[in-house]
Amino acid sequence: MEKAKKVAIVTHVNADPDALSSACALHELVHSLNKEASIEVLVPEGIGSECKYIYVTCQKMNIKMDVIKKYHQIEDRAPCDVCIVLDTASLEQLRLLKNYVLKCDTIIIIDHHQFQDIGPLIKDRQVIYIGDGQSYSSTAEIVFEMLMKYNLSLNNIREIAEILLAGVLWDTKRFQRITRNTFHVVASMIDYGANYEEALKLIATERPSSNRIARIKCIFRHRGFKVRIKNSDIFIAISNVGAYESDCASTLITIGYDISFVITEDESLKAIRIVYRGREDVINSLNIDIYNEFVKKLIEVFGGGGGGHKAAGGAILRTYNIKQVVDQIIKILNSISEIGILEFVENKT
Ligand SMILES: [Mn+2]
Image (tube, rainbow, N blue to C red; front, side, top):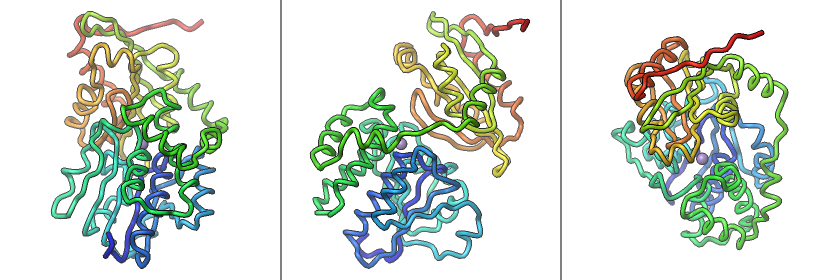
C-alpha cells in the first residue's frame, strides 16, 4: 500500500451508506499511509438517496468520488496497482467496474457478508481478504477497526467516525441486527467524537412517490404460498417490481410473510436480479438458510452470482425470463416442504 501509485476504492452497485462511508474513511486511511498515491473512489451506477448527506460530508473532505454509469468512463483508464473492493459479496455487484477491478495487480476485499463468491473467482492476482463473514454487522465497523489499528492522527477523525456510525446504523437497521462486535466498535466511534443524533440525521430520507408506487405494485403482483418446514407453517411471497426491490421484499415481510423473494429484470445486464428477505426469528428458530437452500440452487440452474446473509441478500441470475425463475423457486419450495405447497388464492370483488 505504501508503494502503490494508483489506488481505486470500489463499492458495490448503488452504494449504500455502509459502502460509501467505508469508501471515504478508507480514502483518508490510504492517503495518510501514502501521500504520493492518486486515490479515487469509484461507485458503479449510482449513489442511493439515503447517502445524500454522507456524500456531501465526503465532498467537504475533498474526497474525489466518481459515479461510473457508462463503460466509456473507465475504458481508457490505466489499471490501478491496488483495488480495494468494499461491502461487496459478489463480483456481479461491481457491474461495469468488474473488469476494471480484475485488471488490478492487488485486490483487497473488505466485507462483512456471510456468503461471498468474490474471493475464489479472482485468480492470478494477489487477493487479500479482510472480514470473516460473521463478526461484523457492517463494513464500516471493519474499516473503523483498521483506522484504530494504524493509530493515525487524522485531523478529520470525528467526521469519519460519524459517517461510519451512520453506515453501521444503516446496515443494522438502527441496531436491530447486530453481531458481537457492533456495540464495542460503536462505543469507540463515539469516543472519537461521533454524535449519535447527527449520524441518524445523515441517513434520514424522504421516500419519493415512485417508491410508494413500487411497493403498491409489489403487493398487487405478489403470489403467496404456505409450506411446512420442520413441522412449522412458513409463509412465502414471490413478487416482481421494476425498481426498489429491497423495499418490496421488506414490505412483504412487514405484512406477515416469513420469507420473500423479489425479482427484477435488469435491462442493462439482460439478466434477472433477485433479492430475498426473511424474518430473523423464524429463520433462526428453524435454522433456515435462504441463500444456500434457495438462491444458490437458482444460481446452479441459471448461472450468475450472489451474496448476503441468512436472512437478507440477493443475486444476479443469467436468464431474462421471470416466469422461469418463479417456476424454479416453486419447484424448490415443493422439494423442501413436508406437505407440498399451498398457494393463497382470493377472488377480487
Ligand atoms: Mn454493508
